[in-house]
Image 1: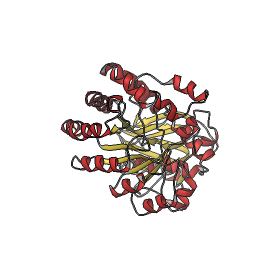
Image 2 (image 1 turned 180 degrees about the horizontal axis):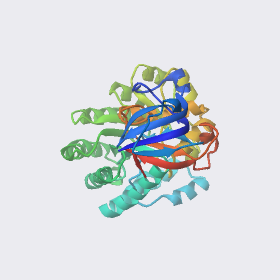
Image 3 (image 1 turned 180 degrees about the vertical axis):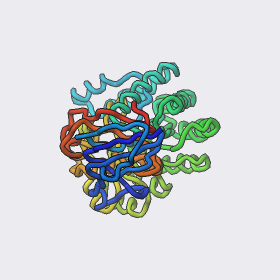
Image 4 (image 1 turned 60 degrees about the vertical axis):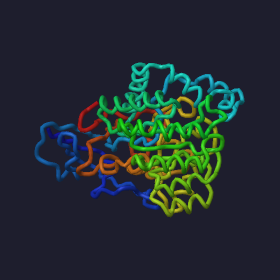
Length: 410
């Protein structure tokens, strides 16, 4: 079935060729077409152009007068499979406790792990499906989901199986990341080596047997996993063909970016603190830096130095980090706005970061992230707006009127 969208005020992120990512000064260029049409067949984009070149017929025609079409957001870093919430920790932070202090008294990741271990598969699936539906409605058309709130063999497998079921039941590209190295479980408090052995000797083989993950992640940070720990885990994961996507530089610079790039990580995520040596390592790699501004907003920590990254000629992606402790929101519209307001990114840079570069950070650049012939028909139609800059400007409003995934209106 063909669907023709006509009188589009502006068609955003149009790419004639399948560009994998944009970097440096090219991030400031957002190709668009005004007074445009878009033609899809079943689940694929097959044509677009100026209205004077509109095809003569289609099975269905949709008039978009006054409205814009964007490719759906690509959220390359989330933890949406979790149990319950951590609202008490939100109150604790208001009362002066730091993120580290809350973790040290049994809160944080270990709190989420305790809840998840006690939650049934069906309950965990239902909670996660509700969150997934929420972020889809907010314009996300491809998403990465991590484990890491299990911290036991069975609980980590439970999380990954929940993600597998979400993949089967929802009409959206989902990538799965194994993050067993998210924190040290309380029972291994004085035996980190024993927990790393558990990850390598028991978790990884079982995950590989069931084909439950695309990527491997490690929280490389002071008090969590060291650079040497990270190297050991990534080395073990290599034989299972798990591609690294690493948490680094959230609170401290400890050499995580260097080890991530040595392992050809697909992305390095957080980067709230960054030094010149890190920039050099990134310039010599194909690794995508990923900023998570909602996390900085919620925790009150520094924002990723986006200008330093982009001005060095590097690419940058944006993602939500949706999780119960530091970012209880999967709203990519807010992420794009916050990137403009706090990271001093232009609307063009932020939209590129949240679409085409996000797709690269998930190995989905051939499927989503731009309006390109042959890519999936994943896009949203805005309400009547004055320009694409109005979307990040109007940070508190939902300006999405309708959403299409694989050519189907949601």
